[in-house]
Image (cartoon, rainbow, N blue to C red; front, side, top):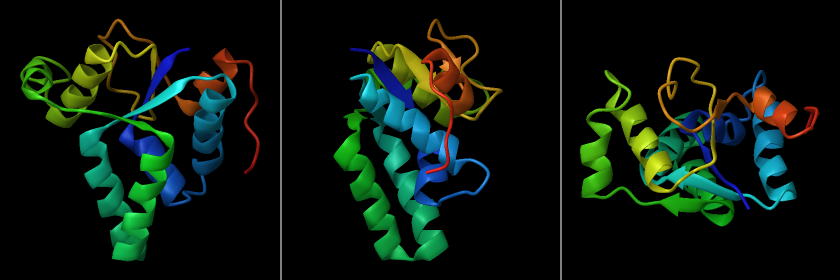
Length: 143
């Protein structure tokens, strides 16, 4: 079983149903389940998911979005060590540093993100949703 960290932007694609990204993002998460992977989400991503969903459709939508993620992903805790390790990762974006430190701490086997500029210096492969699907032998479909 692999441990795949799903970046915040992928979750936001899914909960906001972003037309240009939702199909590949959903398929990438579904591919994890299909192959028995553990799906990881850093705890701070939940506040961002809530924020974007609530801003788009109200607080109830924010709570529903967080509830959905809690049902399908393992929450990666952010402790003092993760916060300290994040200081030297992904400068100047500390938030991406947190994601990187979480991926390292949890020994993630991959990161799925649409952030092409981040996570390049980690010893963990980084994939866009389309790249992740291709590596796993899937083709994206509309969902």
